[in-house]
Structure formats: structure tokens, C-alpha cells
Length: 237
Ligand SMILES: Nc1ncnc2c1ncn2[C@@H]1O[C@H](COP(=O)(O)OP(=O)(O)O)[C@@H](O)[C@H]1O
Ligand SMILES: [Mg+2]
Image 1 (cartoon, protein in one colour):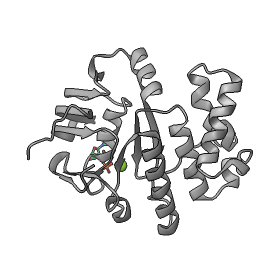
Image 2 (image 1 turned 180 degrees about the horizontal axis):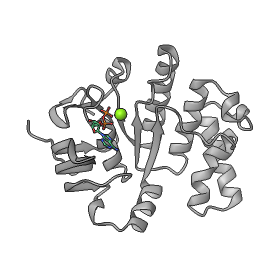
Image 3 (image 1 turned 180 degrees about the vertical axis):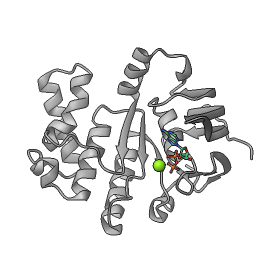
């Protein structure tokens, strides 16, 4: 396949290899991946369990580093950044949404959403304004003072979406965001992500095998055993 390379790509991977050392053997998680992911779209990485989806998202999200090859995110060659600069880059540009929501259990919904803004050094008044506006946008303003264990799965994922988007990142990475939700709740979460993507002009990159989510994707990257099989563009924008 020929990778689609355009000037509006938000992520570019070139000949990326990722191996994990397990005991005395190397496990090849990603095998020579070259791809370009367009900005301001819903792109999805699909593949069976163990195919390398999470590894790929972790490299794009600068949570993990490639064994070889080039990883460019928001026009920055992240393989060249020091750990400090990488952490700063990540907190400015990237929001994460996880399968298990990953909310901080001892913080309220409001405090979970406010937290990334504390890391950015924002004032109390601005934090309040941004966090409440985002909770409002995901339909949870009236539950702002609830703790995660007082919320349903769908509500938890709404809080996680608000937390990922509150700092207005360029890129949101969502690893199987609907896997722990029933299909009706999953559909409402997909619709919410679609709406905020259009409103905020955010790029979403998913890893999933949820047929419902796949049917909403603009671009599909299929991987198997760490290798890219094909890239389909479902809709032109
Ligand atoms: N931290 C790790 N240490 C060793 N092997 C790993 C690690 N993370 C992932 N792998 C291996 O890499 C491959 C890809 O895993 P992963 O990216 O989690 O796939 P997926 O998200 O598609 O299920 C699998 O063979 C998995 O066992
Ligand atoms: Mg995974």
C-alpha cells in the first residue's frame, strides 16, 4: 500500500519498529510501519487483540518510544525530544481516553477535568471556567461534584472525554473507548466525540474493533501482527 502523505497530516510514522524484550527473546509489536494520519478527522486503527494497536497509540502519544524509525507528531520529531520536553509536548498537544476510563477515584468529576489545567499552570478562575464549560459540553455539569464511583460507565467516559479535551489538545488518542460500554451508551459516546471533534477541530485517533465506532471513522488503518495491512478512506472531507 502507498501511505497517504499530505501537508495536513498530524502524525507521520516512517519505518517504525517496536520490539519488547521478554526474558531472552524480542517480541516484535510493530513491524516497519509507515503511515500518515490526516488532521481534523476521525481515524481508527483496527486489528485483532495483540496486533499492536495500543503500542501504536502509545508511540503516537509519546508514552513509549520506538525501537527504530521516525515518529512525527504535530510536526515535531518526537524521537529527538528529551524526557522533560516530551512530557511538556504531551501535556500541551495530546489528550488520552482509555477503555477503563482511568479517572482518579479520589477526585470529583470536576477535579478530574480540572487536573490537566493545573499541570498547565492555569489560574484557579480560568480552570473553573474551562472545566465547567467542558463538563457542560459533555452534559455532566450537574454531576460535577460526584466521585467516579457515583457515576455510570457512560458518565465516567463523558468525564474522561471532558478531561481529554479541556486543554484543547491538537490530538486525542482513544484506546478502545467504547469497549466497556453497552451499545446504546457507546453510540452516545461516539456521537459526543463526533460533535466535539467538529466543534473544536480536534483530531481523533482510535484503536478499536467496535463495529459501531468503525462505521463512524473517516480513515481506517488495519494492522495485523504489527504490520500495516491497508489504509481506507471512508469519507472525503
Ligand atoms: N509491555 C510489553 N511487554 C512485552 N510485550 C508487550 C508489551 N506490550 C505489548 N506487548 C506485545 O506486543 C504485541 C502487541 O500488543 P498491543 O499493542 O497491546 O496489541 P493490541 O492493543 O492490538 O491488543 C502483543 O504481542 C503483546 O503481547
Ligand atoms: Mg490494546
